Amino acid sequence: MVPNWHHDFQPQQAIRKMRLIRPFSTRGTHGRCWPHAPLEVPTMSISRRSANHPEKGRITARVPLNVQETIQRAAELTGVPVNAYIVQVVHQHAQDFIDRHEMKNIVLSERDSEWFLEQLAKPRSPNAKLKNALAAYREAVDDDEDPPALPTAEGVA
Image (cartoon, rainbow, N blue to C red):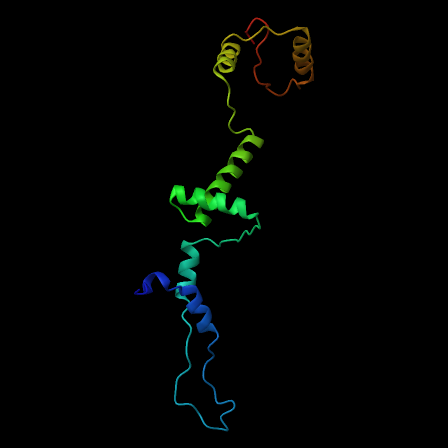
């Protein structure tokens, strides 16, 4: 099998290895100088890669073998590597959970959605408690300020 050098080459690891190389010096050479110029470490590829690729975190989990086999089987059926499958499924589940918790997506049955639309189309007239609250609000508003126009029971402000 011929190695795929382009695929196997990892610039981050190569740069880390190059950082370990120090410039040549005369230390320990008993006064003799090396005829070579100091080595320089390229830094361009570090900044370019970090701008294009965000940092990645690591999540590990120990699971029973039957769970691992189930996950591997599902990944095989979808045609993606196990890591990619786990990330896709867990990320989608987490996003759905957050959306439900923050009530971003409310799902109603057909009957409930019809009732909701009817309530929006035909608002009820205000009861005594709401009328009293509106009167108290109007009394509390300073005469100098221009309060927002609020509807009355007749629908005219």
